[in-house]
Image (cartoon, rainbow, N blue to C red):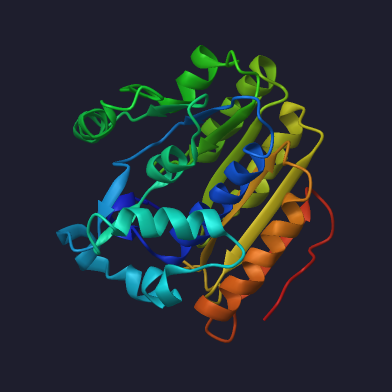
Length: 280
């Protein structure tokens, strides 16, 4: 499938992905040492929910519009990012670059990679006054080999591709192998859509093949899986922070209540273990 962020801003997959990202960022902030975040497929940074693209799908109606006052008890960092972005205009929604930027301290860094020239230039204009943020108009997978390891030796790589290529999971696997060789101790968070393919299993297997010993896989589906429509999304996380599994279970429980339709399912489990934590 082709998952362009502008068409899906504020939907259930974005909420799950961005809330989980905010939790990881909160955990990185627990220690005073600086960290770096590399976002390989940054997109626009902030999205207009009143835009033609967002209005065409209106997926926010089954997503962010169902969050009462924009709140999530299990992901306070996400809720505060949403509130800060909406303070500028009610119809705005923060993407991963903005959520990460809002979580940065003065000592932290954010590297954004975007291959689309118009989106990349929009990112540069948006963040040109923030010295903590650098924007690269380049292939994010290539950047993993070129920009790692960071001087800080702490942080995460956020991989959020549009899945418009038939070999996207293969590209992710090669990037993870490269990242493992360059920066074995970094946190790697890979997002994937859940529709009709086995993206999650393939990415999980690639992470293990790359040599990561600690891999967590989390999925949240507010809709039943029928193989045709977007049912939900998942994350494969290499080197997850301590207790992240518990935090993600709390997130999935809350999202099931808010976004579920009676047949919502979720799972948070270590790689290759039996499927656990599912709810309906």
